[in-house]
Length: 358
Image (cartoon, rainbow, N blue to C red):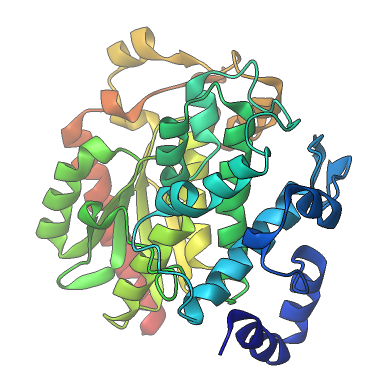
């Protein structure tokens, strides 16, 4: 059976919500994109002034990038099911370089097509903070100077996320995407539903120490984990019978660290994962000595205008440092204080859960 026949069968079994979404966002009636001419591509996917999913983002491409990418991914999924295309068996970068990038380049949609210079005026650090850790790896390979390509890789990643969150497919099924963060994850031997989470990959040794001491799970990320990583984590936790999760997060004492912690917990509550999650921020000024705070505090007012609201919201929540918008890198925290904060969180969370069951 060909990929188009398989597509018809799948479309006939979709839920009303899935049908509405795919009709709006994917050209399910398009023929094989890989066999179309550039003229046919541009005619089939005419550009729009603005992306409907991101109304504040200007889009000046000569094609509708978002719809084209989603349609390309949809067809790749069907072709893999039909045995007409090999599974990726790699990461998102593998799909970009093997399938999507050559397609866009062949149709002059990668380098010369007009595209939004979304990242002009932003530092490399600010750019990478906008992406999940999986996409960040791809961004590093692309290079922060390539605004058009960064924009498209972001679209690709978000398109895959949406297909997965809408339950059209899973990352690790047909595409056989591999878990890029497997070596930075521990599933607890005794109490897997307790998760010590840190955004610092370099602190995985601390994850190992804490996981061993309390028998709990631990995750070290590189920024906010993407949905591909979360899918693998979810499966590992469910295999241990976990339904309710307690997260103790150790991140930078700043808006972006707190957002990463919240994002990690929120993703686990998505319907495709379905966990009940409670997150506790372990990072506070108590982790730092007064001397370190004085000389190492970071001025958070020197950010792009788009991030000012994040700073304002975080200030209302934490008070910054002395009521001023300053933050701290958690790398400067005292480890004995971190260990004490982890112990306090774990004992309190375990006690509260026990009382709830009683």
